[in-house]
Amino acid sequence: MVERHFEHDETIGAMPAGVLSIDLAALRANYAQLRQRAGRPVAAVLKANAYGLGATRVSEALVREGCRDFCVAHLEEGLRLREGLSADNRIFVLNGILPGGERAAFEGDLVPVINAIDQLERWSNLSASLGRRLPAVIQLDTGMSRLGLAPDDWAQAAEMVGAGDAITLLYIMSHLASADLQGDAQNGAQQAEMARAQRFFPGAALCFANSGGIFLGEAFAGDMVRSGIALYGGAPMSDRPNPMRAVVRLDVAVIQTRRVAAGTRIGYGGAHVARGEMRLATIAAGYADGLPRSLSDRGAVYFDGQRLPIVGRVSMDSMVIDISSLPLNALGPGSVVEIIGPHQTIDDLAGDADTISYEILTGLGARFVRRYSGEDGVTVSEAS
Ligand SMILES: *Cc1c(COP(=O)(O)O)cnc(C)c1O
Image (cartoon, rainbow, N blue to C red; front, top):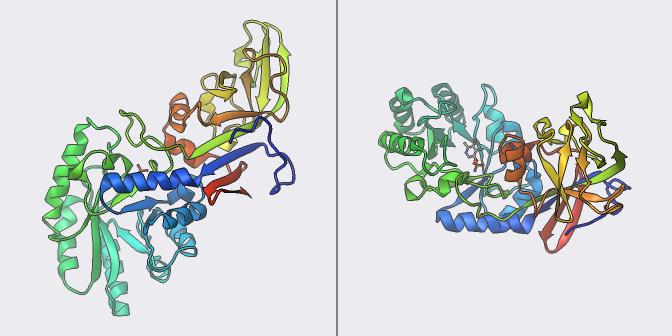
């Protein structure tokens, strides 16, 4: 739904400065596609508030699509997510549990990803003190050197798990460092290391692939996959076309327009000097809204399919665009320009900003009004 002008928004009682639209039907279609491609259950990765899109709304839509399993990074995220889910939804805490957080994790019905021997000890101790076998995932470091048990610890962990009634091992897990690149040799190396790790945990179910890994083939699939970015419409592979549906669109209001003469300096530092006469518009979003300062004099926004380059430095709350290519008076205060949408994907914007879609999505600011559509045809606005 493309608006050329923002309407009055009920949640704020005025015209919004920016609207982040989230298409929950596209999200669900992406989930279904990944589920089909993987041929395995897909755990939805909802860390960082579902990559900035709203963990509550996203989880509700995915549950309706048949998703049962969810991953977050932190204990606190898991506790918050738990409130809206039912007991048969599992929530995995990827970063594991910091010392002393075990009881809160247990009471919140969260499944820790155990990344080190001391974490395994503490979870086993809690299990023993409760007289139960609490569920856990054990992460093995197969080459990323970020989280997970180092190969030297695999035998000891396997012994502790095999000791009987310590914990219930739901999955062994690992994470791929280069899954977005089909041709990267690190994928094969990690897969071989995973195969070696599996011999320490005979019969254990495996959770290996992330979004990119789903596209790497059967050897990476395991028994359950984990997907974040592909659900939200980002490209799972950086060296192949993006097969996912766009979920997000970002529109921002024009605040003011002006005409400047050749030689006029534009923005902080006067970093851009007009080469000829220019028509400019200032729009209501800047780096505090998650539009990186690295877009200064690099990226663009769109209006009526027309590319409008960003000129000068991105400010905190605004930036200036070159509208000289548009007919006179084509836009004015309250007009809406597209930052993410049909003309510019998250990956396009990320490319201009020298970053990745993940960073763009998770950074999109709290000042945008979020509008959800695609569930029963209803559009719901939430100021966040
Ligand atoms: C963030 C994360 C994921 C999701 O990765 P995507 O590339 O967004 O699919 C999966 N597993 C782990 C361990 C993660 O940290």
